Image 1 (cartoon, one colour):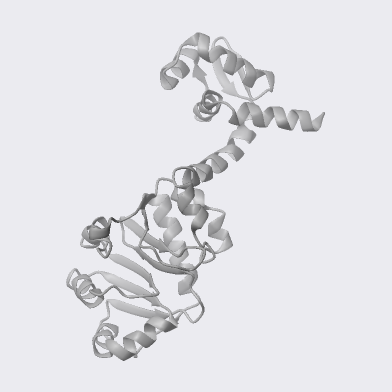
Image 2 (cartoon, one colour):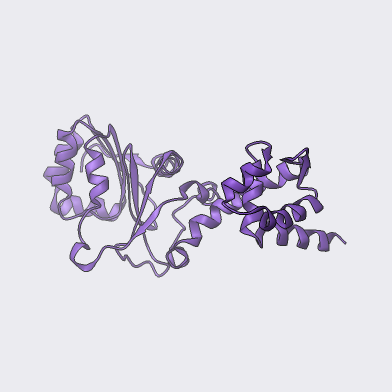
Length: 265
């Protein structure tokens, strides 16, 4: 009997977009039928059977034409929303997520990927494959704080950092050991010049970082991940919005907490 009830609930919740939409609308409070019809852009004969199914399993109830969630309905919807948001993250770009090496994400944030709902996967064409994300660079000019996790440096890295200094931004950069060695060999003087600038902070993450780059300013972030075979393919995950920025800040802080300040190279 319990298995039949579980199956029935799952079918009712996920086999109809209209039923899901009704539950989500009622989460914000009771609604009249006309409000539900308007919000869903549908007709009464199409919606009534869906509402009847939700009533039959005691997720909603109605009095005098007003529909609302039952206590059971409120519990179910509260648990349903995080799952739907997580599915939204994967659904639009399932091929991208299927091929990504996600080991760089700490478990606490991996199970909160729903917070980056709305992020866009950008695949630069061949002509623009080496270009830095223009939206990110433009918003850096109006950002106070810039955060970077780097396992390689763009060819115009020093030019970009100089521009950030000119904009009076506060910059924190986490690098891995391979990039530190490259800076020592090729750009020691330039990087040491940045290190003594009070607006720039360099840190060394001593362990392996299974990603390409992460960059975040006050308005957006850009994440370049590795594929499961640890190859780099220039694909970008571009994110905006307060939830995505909070998630990105926590990702940066996770690595910062295990990093060592660099005072000279």
